[in-house]
Length: 174
Image 1 (spheres, rainbow, N blue to C red):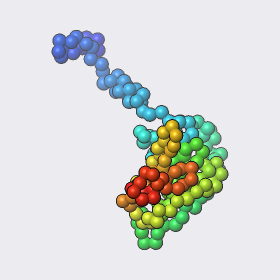
Image 2: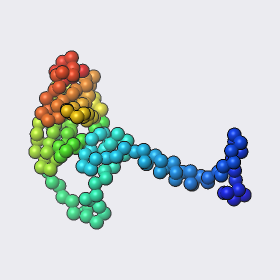
Image 3: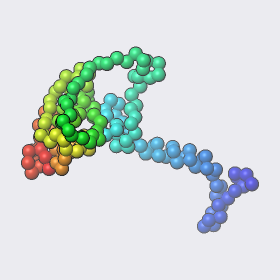
Image 4: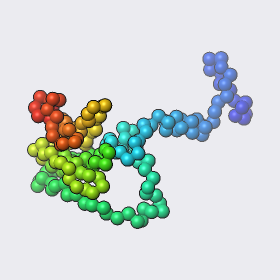
């Protein structure tokens, strides 16, 4: 029996039954169209975007020129705490040309992504505590950089690196 001859008898419908490869292709197309769009040069969430795709739509680097890449700058974020076993689940964020990261001692920092120059550092004095990465939040008027250091949720003003005091019980942490 061919594709057009197979019919669904459920609920009195007389519909063609699509072969599995067609269903898989349509499902994949549907899921891809639901994936959030990336902004051109921003890496605003852990692993790239809210969908955790590990993917950037930037096209300046390709198979033909990847061998020409050179180190532009190196940044030392700080040493590990002696004897500690830090758990790092983080990737840097890049927002509008600024790279935001965490050191092994949970010191947050901001760098000019083009030059590697340090813009600010914030030390919550929480070395050795576990953390789960940086998170970016923004509305029309302001933006915030969030991360955890042990049991504390820290909120920073990303333009200054200072704790956001109006958000928490204590200066910048909840």
